[in-house]
Image 1 (cartoon, each protein chain N blue to C red):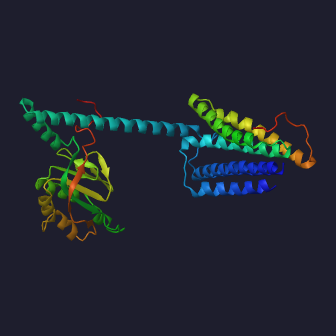
Image 2 (image 1 turned 60 degrees about the vertical axis):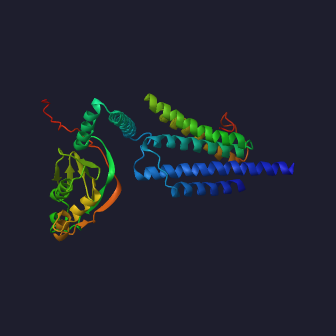
Image 3 (image 1 turned 90 degrees about the horizontal axis):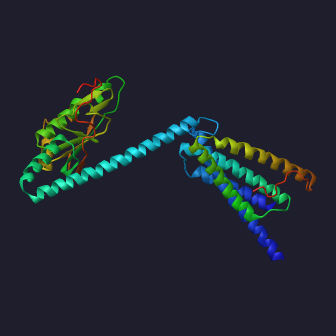
Length: 124
Length: 245
């Protein structure tokens, strides 16, 4: 629980940091950042689920977070270079995973026991 | 064992905090851009993004070409200076050629000179035309400078040559092919004392601009030891649309 509170503080710090520091991505990179954010959301929900399942490993979580976001952005970039809208694929894939994880978290919170739901573990 | 679990929990907290900070920063940066309306989202208008990228690419390419041109021009000038220094038959011709180039305005110049700034007066709905800087104002100053023996004159970034027209186009002044807006910084290379005296002449161009009660703010000309004047930045021969040569 304490971890979550500190994490929310971290989130607030990050938000304030991003708003205070006047960084602007060039317009053409904005799509990549949006896909990266989606990947980040996916990883975070995966991490929450893994914590509830007592399978959390911070090394997997951290590496998964950064590699997922970077890979998602890279995939979108390659897609844009080739003229294929791979962002769409990322949005669909991550969307499905996010909802899976959310459902799993809900089950875990409701029944406080592990219910087989999805074959992935840490989801990173 | 206790130490171990404690370690584990701090590591968890560290991981979550790092992730949360990065995630928050990402979100707020994206929010900023979307708020500004500039962000083209994945489903939005990919065309805007691609056109933007293309424009940026073309701009960079143009910049590179311009830099290359500057380098090559510098090399050419160096070689010509060498030729002059070596003397001989070609030296005289080269000297004439470089003088002609200065006249034609095809080379950037650096030297001592003067600088004067003319800014518009405060606009008024009734008598707006009175308070803005007009083409003849600039022309009179430029003519005075040339008459006083200036080697080269520039208004803002536009080199004024024999083939340069100065005329009004709506609210801006066109100098050659460039449209300029106030404040107009007129720079001239030449004997700075003479140029300054010519501009400061009682009844001279600056005096007339100041005394016309038009609210123009005209700085007093000041001599500078290093005045940089760019080369003419457009084809010297007017390009018509008709395609006749």
